Image (cartoon, rainbow, N blue to C red; front, top):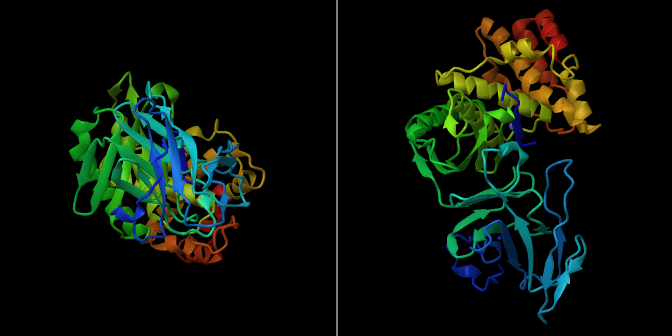
Length: 410
Ligand SMILES: [Zn+2]
């Protein structure tokens, strides 16, 4: 799962006639999802796909947020006789093109929770489309991209269905941050953070350098960042990661930055960067808790004041829902019983677990960073830590210290 709420005391139809002229298209077989937003109504877009070369095809529903109640898209099939049929999923059909509408929530009043993962329109002149619920796929088609009508250069490949979802931002960008290791295109809902950008970009580069070493990936970092304000009265700062993009909230109080704005933005950014960098197969409790712990570690590097997970857990465990439940059971409650009330434990109790373990390793002059690859499991259904990882820990910290930590948290 790619959503991360830090609960810290925190497309008009234009048929694509000319696929081959699009500089972005890598091959003539690549399907283009054309998104068109009319100027008169920027919150409703039409997406259309030229399917005239496919013959019979089968459409499958869009990927969606797990456990969400997907509202079925109303998808039209335009036939060669120019009549309009409704497309049914998982049934063969033949169309000249297909089209449907998607909606964007207009941003206002510093109230958007980035972890809600709703597609948004900023009146400052940009859009963010989440894949979730919006992009059905043609079975058997591996190469597709989404492009903006009238902006042939603004395209993004649809990620593989096993990869993180598409987050597609376009329109008026706020800034481009380019450093030795990073190329970031920023979309923000106001210019309030602009004076901080040189400092923020240095911090993001430092985070990226560190996290890419730990998570064993060192690829070109050409990402879109979407920053959206949320007022502190909502007591939550969220984020969500997709393929080569993430969205993060930044905290404001009555349209002003606060002393918590930067630390929290950097922490959410680091959390989502971990999701973006890591290709390890991990159960969700490990995925979230590790992202949260490494967000803390990454922010610590910046000399920015941020609270330690073990301290946060100590402070809040007496009032935190399901605090006494171990992380393995919490994970089963979430995955088997679909009880999301256990999910926040992953962030708080989970990150405290990693910190306590890391401190124990550091006492023996080792560090958790060097053992992350042992956590990856070929079985995505598993809950428990891999035996190889546990064995490695016991070898360093001893079985009784391991038992103490695992009894306390797992
Ligand atoms: Zn997360």
